[in-house]
Length: 166
Image (tube, rainbow, N blue to C red; front, side, top):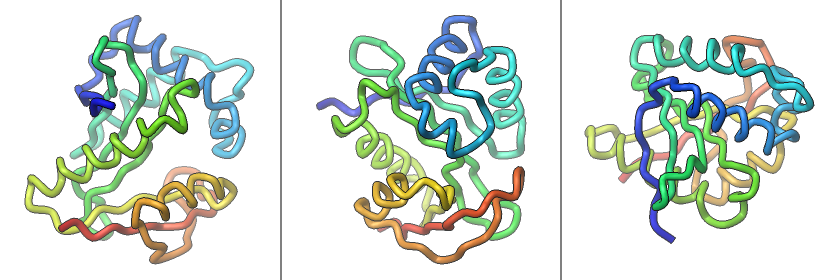
């Protein structure tokens, strides 16, 4: 499998529709996060939320595309967390029909290489406490739990994970 390419989201109508499709194809995540009703995801709200991510200092909203140009994932990154200075993965979501095919692992590797290339020695993320399959995914890739605390935006219980980059 070829690593999907990551490119900045430009917020075209087609890209918004693709991202809504990613959310719709991941109803279990939507239920766990509590941000979106998986039965009725509003494109305007998704766009507003992602634009806010992209506007934050050091924030990036990236689309992952396969070799045919099809959007297969979404990645939100933060170059430097205001509390600890580490880069963070805010969200990494793969289109439902592409899950369990290695796409997520390839995206994680691409993100790790991106920050390693910038001379960063570690990377962090937070997994919702009520999403054990996500914790298992990240653990399988060598990420380790370093803390438990509420997320900054919604105060949901989370597992903070760290991976040393080498």
